Image (cartoon, one colour):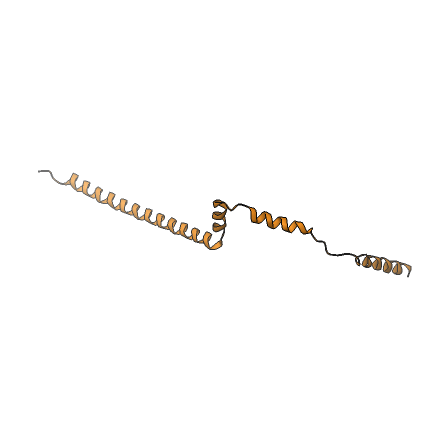
Length: 104
């Protein structure tokens, strides 16, 4: 029974220790210094570009354009290869007929 009373006293002492506690606050000048620092930073052209490119709409738009260009270049390369193959086939046929035709 003595242990329960001692335990209850410890719990009460612990809870009473929070009575004088208050919320921690930063000094008043800290916020003014932070705001002054953010306002005084020079907005260079590079920082403005980074801010624009960091927007999701802009970055996804650029990605979409790059993917479209990539697909176009791949498909145009395939059609050029087919054209070259057809031209090579026609050239082979012409040389075959010229070499096998009787010369007068």
